[in-house]
Amino acid sequence: MRFMIINKADADSEAGKFPPAEVAEGVGKVVEDLSKAGVLLFAEGVHRSSLGARVKVDGGKRTVTDGPFAETKELVGGVIVVEVRNRDEAIEWAARLAEALRDEVEVRRVVEEADFGPDSDVFAG
Image (tube, rainbow, N blue to C red; front, side):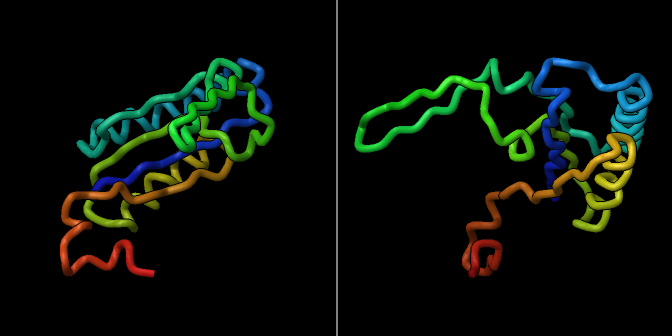
């Protein structure tokens, strides 16, 4: 199973500031351990929203809104994708990342082809 661990942007990351050295080192250690465990698929941070854009298409009309975006708590700061045995293992890794970041992270399962099969309950309401 693949899971995405998402850390949120904050005022500092949106200002283009690097995290404190101890936070960067802690995150680096988690990423290194994920790699050594053989579960890391990729880990990437993203630039601040002022360098991004939101794109919407409605009725064939495209609207592009340049950043920055106001709701920092809703912005992605970075993602790590892991392939693990189950949700509990993903949560264990996420907890290590949250501790290193000193912040909450989100864990979401990545949709797989099998999730669209007739026996799947992934999309059931």
